[in-house]
Length: 138
Image (cartoon, rainbow, N blue to C red; front, side):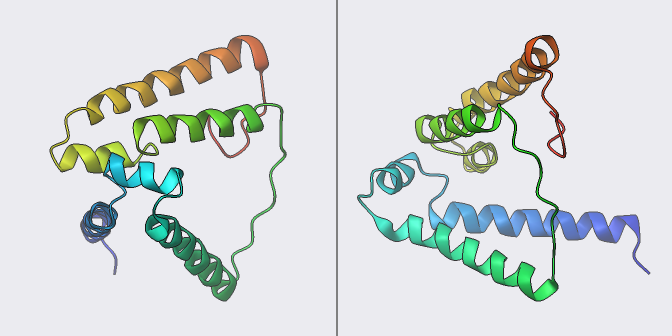
C-alpha cells in the first residue's frame, strides 16, 4: 500500500536525483548554456536531444497519448519570450532552483523574474487577451 509519506519521499528523492543530474551535466552553469546556445560546444545540446529521444521512446512504449491542444495567438510570442529569457538568464524556470541549491545567489533574480512574469501574464491575459488557458493553467 502506498502511503502519502512514501509518495512524498519518492518525490523528494527523485527531485534530488534530477537536480544532481542537471547540475552535473552543466545545465546550471551559464557559461555551459551560452556555449550550447552559440553552438560552440554540442555536448549539452546532444544531451538535451538525447533526453528528448528517451522520453519519446518511453511515451511510445507506454502508449501515452495526448490530445493536441489548440494553438492560440499567445503561443508564438510566449515561446519566443521563454527562449529569450532562457538564453539571457541561463536557465529555464527550473534551472535557477538548481543554481540556488548550488550556492549561485544571482539565481534569486531569475526566480523573481519568473514570478513577476507569471503574474504579469495572468494579469495581461485577464485584462486584454482572454486566451483559452487550456491545460497550461495560466
